[in-house]
Amino acid sequence: MNVQESFDKFIKDSKRVLKVSRKPDGKEYRELAKISALGVVIIGGIGYIIVALGSLIGL
Image (cartoon, rainbow, N blue to C red):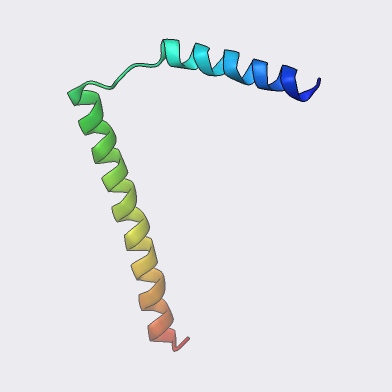
């Protein structure tokens, strides 16, 4: 497969994805925001615990 064929396939696939995609409604957007915020809080909490344990141990 040469470069031109690869580029044409990429364009074709991109058009197909854009046709089936849609903008999320308000409810869906809020759910995604809540899940993302929860993930940030969990990762931050894990990081805080690791730093706290490290300072207690003296690392």
